[in-house]
Length: 75
Image 1: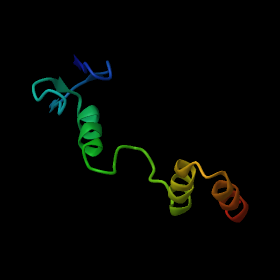
Image 2 (image 1 turned 30 degrees about the horizontal axis):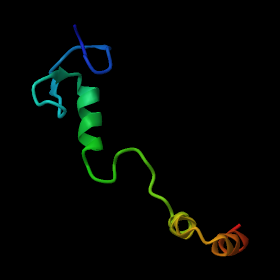
Image 3 (image 1 turned 180 degrees about the horizontal axis):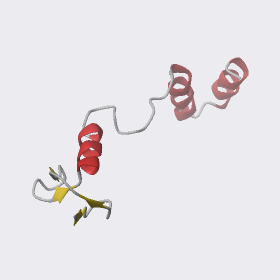
């Protein structure tokens, strides 16, 4: 049994090579997690929906009336 340096859990079997430094052996679970997180858009965060993107854009303008209008029409 070997202990994974990333998650500190013991594992057996074939290790995975960490994508962080390309030399550290990590457990297969952490290796799979790193592989999935390396795919664009698959980092665990959800993508904002169109209304949320619009709300952020309107809020970024600093226009108070536009924000009040947006809130009134998107509640």
